[in-house]
Image (cartoon, rainbow over the protein chains, first blue to last red):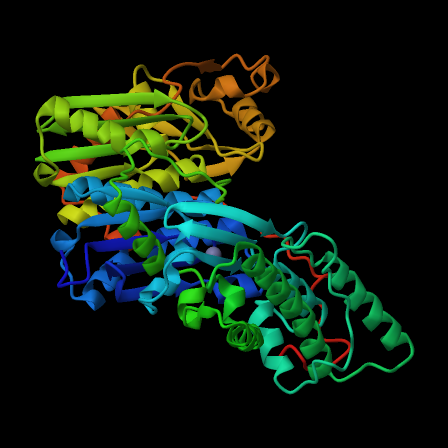
Length: 338
Length: 238
Ligand SMILES: [Zn+2]
């Protein structure tokens, strides 16, 4: 056991394009390292599953070594080992899960397969000890967008999800259309910094589903608008377009999240996933939370994106409730939380 | 010398452990859906059968393919996890050598094949020699039609082993010099045998260089029509 922090858990995350490993002691972050493949995928404009899987095979062992070394923990001092079981790309999941299970077996330690989304849901705990259920959690990234009600740890109800594109996917596709490259979220965030978010009013799908998210209408509207503007030779400044797109996405995410807060009456909101690294979204969530007198718990940007520490943090909770995965456990690419 | 051998190149998967030329335990499963659920459980079973502890492992021998990528990665990740935890060296073995060695009876040239998906197979020619086989060319990926073309012009009698049953009968029709035989799948017992020979010669692979033998570049389709060069705002993407 770690000094006062709870059990020491090594967490491995390889569901998509980041090979990530973290060590935590309870909810105390000891280390978080990753080998980003952004450059490898940028030339294709998106994640290529076979490229991702190959990179994981090469990165996994040195990263586990680095995470333990940075945490100042010897492998024999680890109390449990966890890995992402799903959702994700099967060829990528297999690498981290296979390594973790074999590593745990050899060291005679408990092994836990963890839902990636539950990892995101636990990430804020690593920096905010006050983050506790009941809470509403907004999870948004390139692969997923969900609003989850957490009445207590281990119990999750999905209140809303995207009915078409994930929020991060909308950022990626629009950034690509604008020639901003990949990944789109950070590119639009940067371009928007110099722009006016009220310059163009793109549609918000707020409609009659109070908690579900939709971004395909926005995508169509932006591409049509820009095609028209180009024909009329009246293309607005890049910063204004980026800021207006970002504002439309942020409006939808904030509105739906707080609809869920109103419906459940919870006093705490949290977030996770790469989209939560967006500066404008963070500021707007903070403003509305302050307005409504609701506590907000957002991980720092490095812990919003995929990381191994969040998998370890979720595993710490399950270690306490007695869950273990068997040596015959397998990945589940279609796993769904809530 | 106690060795753990892992084999996951085809729909079959197996684990074997042994010491000084003697097989101590082995487990086999044929399941095309994947090998991750089987591997560590099978290793646990074999160790219990033999009364071994993980600390007893002196080396881990792993079939690195060619074969099916996801299976190979499950095997390599498992081998790396165990080797990292006990600090044991890794020994890499080719699935085609494993097949050829088990087939090495008689005087025919041996041509093992494994399915590498996308309608392709991997193959490599071997000659039987006393006590084993020697390779007679490099491993290559080809279509079943290419394989037929090779066998048609080959003046030598050939024994085709591996998963030829997964190919159409037309691939072999009328090829009188090509006989088909067993084994269908590579086995961890042969990986173990080869592993022992390589371990005795200290022929180990540094862990950072252990990866599947893919024989093919990753297929990534670049959607250039979707990636615009910043036409509306020149230089935006730079
Ligand atoms: Zn994620």
